[in-house]
Image (cartoon, rainbow, N blue to C red):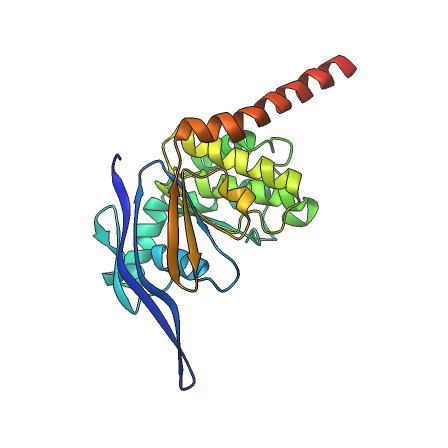
Length: 257
């Protein structure tokens, strides 16, 4: 199975709303390994985003433990968590979460400031990752000058730029059309595979789950089942056909010009 990178044990989350208690997660047990693309699939209110927030250290569990790289993050202070996330974790959001006053280049370079990179090296890496997501002509564009798909590509570049071991993605295709969603998932899949990074994706869309090695079906705060797939099977069924289609598109473009 490889290196265990995330382990969730007996995780429980209960919210108090007035005099009521709402169980968001109920004794979740889960293991995620290095290099896995893992999808948490469920409808609205199933507890999938709460589970992601717990694993990312954005919320504290009511009971249970979460270990990332054998470190119990639920025991960390906010300052320790912030340092841990800066070093090991990247985030991709449904609403992109780009800073409107900054260019694409500046948005992507932002995480590297906290890692102590010089301005020259920050910009060099930001250009490299914007090129990787197909935005080499958008360095100086601000979010309002880009489409939703382009903004999400900037978000992906920002998440991957520091080469974190884990990427948490919360509904990364939620605001995108079908074609753009496929492009975004293809980019994420390829980038993660190149450096054996782990991705944990939360989604309600079964089409997004097709790109995952592990699919965790969650409902009413409980894991219903876990599907595991072989990496080669995912590639042959979903990635390779896209690459063939994309290559044919490029060849047609060359002929037409």
